[in-house]
Length: 356
Ligand SMILES: Cc1cc2nc3c(=O)[nH]c(=O)nc-3n(C[C@H](O)[C@H](O)[C@H](O)COP(=O)(O)OP(=O)(O)OC[C@H]3O[C@@H](n4cnc5c(N)ncnc54)[C@H](O)[C@@H]3O)c2cc1C
Image 1 (cartoon, protein in one colour):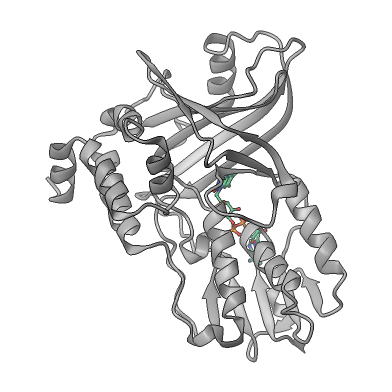
Image 2 (cartoon, protein in one colour):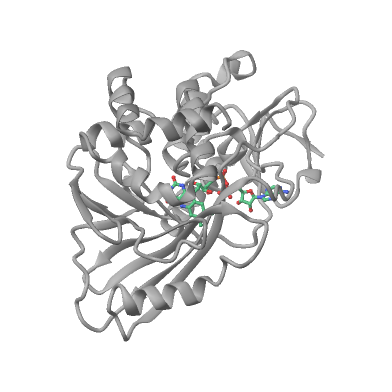
């Protein structure tokens, strides 16, 4: 078995982002890297979207950027602008291709299907495979999206619909999300925040076809792509091991209140690259503690009062849109945090905090 200076377990979003970051900053000229990834081929399987609050390496994989978004309750709609922090969607197919092509140019980088093919004992290991037993009592954001194409130009492709709560909630939290890439092409996603202890919320195909017909008023369309997934709204329990640094979802890079992970992964990759020479003795990178605390309280409210959540999500955007985006993307200052906390229904949050 061969020895490597670095091993990355899992060549998905976090593993490849890290390998790319190391490669383009010439950290692999005199070091060897093994990427362990079992998938047989890379193809588009996710659409990563986020407000662009920091620069990243994948501007050329952005499928579309928007400067406006809306939120919808059954009785009202809010239209908001995000000129300073455009909402971007990354095509994972372009992302995988760009990185794999680049990594193949360096003979110090090798790909393996199985961790047993390499010796881990003398390497720094970056692990992106979360240890996730079927935690039935934990909350997940689970969803299914289809990209549809219509004959006519139906969509306004200048604005996304971030959350449309005008749909059945089934004692959970449910919304639709629409990203119009073109006037005749959009990703429409049904999203649930719930436990995964039964399958009753997973009739995704029906939910999508009803929504497209009844809410979007589209009768004829073709499905050109489908994605499905679940983001844990809890931190995976990866056991601490010497020489092993967890990255991606496994490394706690998901913002638990929103599921946003992509940009945190990029920031973590940069942090590792900047400290790579002494990474084992460098402070662990994590989402700031204040967000971890606030998200925990938020999730308690969500679990206890699901019926209040559509209104709460709506209220979060009552003040400055820039501040709210920064808050949701872990970039807010104390005053911005405070202004958002003030907009929340205090009694509900205090009760959740006290476990009442
Ligand atoms: C469908 C979907 C859409 C998402 N959309 C967004 C979004 O819009 N915005 C956002 O910020 N976040 C989003 N997320 C959340 C998050 O950004 C992604 O889950 C992201 O892919 C996490 O990166 P990761 O590297 O931790 O995991 P992954 O990208 O899943 O990578 C893990 C890799 O490990 C490999 N692997 C599995 N088992 C093993 C093993 N035993 N040994 C070695 N390798 C193994 C897998 O094949 C995979 O390639 C989305 C998640 C999903 C599932």
